[in-house]
Length: 167
Image (cartoon, rainbow, N blue to C red):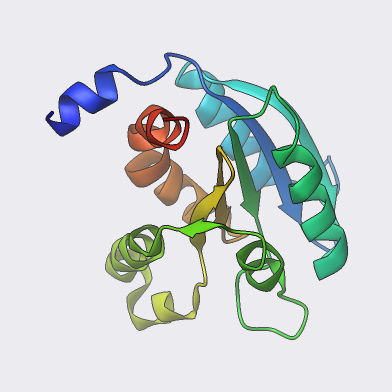
């Protein structure tokens, strides 16, 4: 079966929970979380909920674990906490939960980012994988990085990712 045929079998509407990981963001200035939700909705997908969580690995992991256990969530997308600073811990929190990893996601994201920001792209620890039948994608906190990942990688493959994960 071709990739196009696989994509055609995916759900028309994917249910996504969005998590902003930040010590400083609020609903008023969460531009990356809003960008994710807006791009998803424009593509015909459903945002089942949003949360802002402090960059504390145990709290982030617990929220992701809880959402992965909810029947109305197909995908969890996080934004923030994927860099190298001492407070960036989303990668560790999420990676410890993943049962299957999609290393190609991070590789492709960094390749695309390189065209925009040069070698600083290597500092991103964007990642993706699955927890059971739920896809988990962790994006940087930068709105520009979120828009790049969502438009070039996530939205074009979202239904296909869910279709393959739920087999």
